[in-house]
Amino acid sequence: MEKYDVLIIGAGIAGLYAAMNIPKEKNVLVVCKDIPWECNTFYAQGGMVTAQGEADIPLHVKDTMIAGAEHNDREVVEILSRTSLETTKDIIDRGMQFDVGETGELLFTKEAAHSTARIIHAGGDATGRYMHHFMMTQNKHKLQRNTLVYDLLIENGRCFGAKALVNYEHKTILADDVIIASGGVGSLYEFNTNSRTVSADIHGICVEKGIELADMEMMQFHPTVFVKTPFARKLLLTEALRGEGAWIVSKDGRRFLFDYDERGELASRDIVSRAIFDHKRKTGQEVYLDFSMFEEKWFAKRFPNITRSFEAIGYKFPKDRVPISPAFHYAVGGIKCDTDGCVEGIDGLYVIGEASSTGVHGANRLASNSLLEGVVFAKRAVDHLLGKEKVEMAVPKFDKEYKNIVHHENDKIYKHRLRKIMWEEAGIIRTKKGLLKAKNLIYDMKNREIGRLLELRLNTAAAIIEAALKRKVSLGTHHIEK
Ligand SMILES: Cc1cc2nc3c(=O)[nH]c(=O)nc-3n(C[C@H](O)[C@H](O)[C@H](O)COP(=O)(O)OP(=O)(O)OC[C@H]3O[C@@H](n4cnc5c(N)ncnc54)[C@H](O)[C@@H]3O)c2cc1C
Image (cartoon, rainbow, N blue to C red; front, side, top):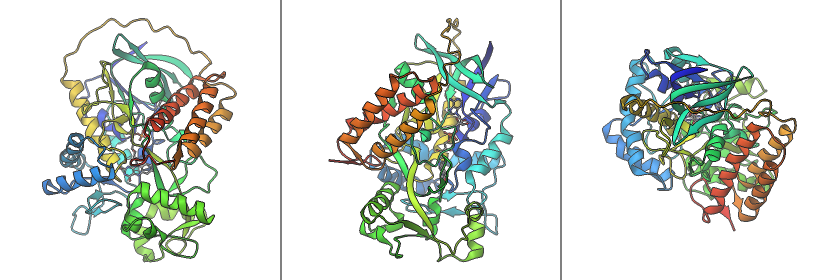
């Protein structure tokens, strides 16, 4: 049986930045489900927020609170904003290259609902890919791919490690401390922008162990996604496009968003998503993102990633407009923890990044706050972990065997059914009737012969539905119709 000082579940920005901050002498294992770059971090386009100096902190806090419908924990938002000054500096000092202007000054862009340009980016619109690559090269600890965690070893209020399939073999991994950095819940939704590895398994384990999830009704939908592809992960068109001036138009070219909000394209994500959803529902017509106002060379340099990936499917930007739909994008809620990532009541268990819920995003996330959240709270969790006294405890026996029950032959059908019902009933516009229908279907599937991984997805889906049923009035991303 392997034994480590620290086990980090997840190799996105949160997991890797945590690893970068743990000294080399510690025995650390970072695991990820698939290849390391299959994670949401890799697909992040627009950039990372960083407060523009002390003077910008109150404004960044205000923007974050407004986007979060004041449901945020202000103290946590202040930590996020203030710490951005040191974490951004740390990442740059270690060698990360964000985009700079001709005189070497950092380039800042603006995105929806930010009152100033405070978003740094890399590779134009490939910020996540650049940051992920940088952190992979900085990580000095062992990184193990093809490791799928399907249980946490918890007894008497302490976490002792995890059970995982490592290259399809069952393994027990012991660790003094476990950091969950497993990302969000994208695979629960039919239309989503997320990596296929992000499927709410660890949230599902937490539900089973009685660990609290918070704000699970707060699921964010991205307004501008190209969903007409056969792949599970749909193609996102970054918010920065609208920040730079792209328009959302109806079939006949009208900027109809102003009918819904005076900020038009720069209204917050949930407002734009609902407006597009509503317009499509009412008119039965396509909605488009229009870039025709941009100069071709500038566009190709500023958005090389998007230009390339859409060229491959026949679009010529910025001339061609592209049909768009909202899609599930980001889990605002998650596994409840404090500002050091500690999971209440379970010693040795931390959670960071999109998997966590610190209260920082409130009822909706301000664009580009999540890469920042990943680094700020990873560092705090590591500081806490390294600063505490080590308490040796005998490892209890964890002898529950899972053998071949991780997957079951019918899972695929049920998984598809789950994704559809979550999109239709726990998506952009919810009703009590629809949520109850979804709840019944989920419990029906839970009672069937299913594999462990589907069971975990269903646990998380049920938590989302329960939370949505509890919140009777619309707030932030949660929109409920009578
Ligand atoms: C298309 C897209 C664009 C985005 N653009 C931006 C942006 O411009 N700015 C911004 O701030 N945010 C953006 N976001 C959100 C942001 O990318 C994510 O919130 C953030 O990267 C999450 O980082 P993370 O480290 O928490 O998780 P992830 O990067 O998703 O990593 C999760 C890791 O957990 C592993 N894992 C999951 N389950 C298991 C398991 N059971 N066992 C073992 N390993 C497991 C995965 O393999 C993966 O390594 C975007 C998201 C998407 C999808």
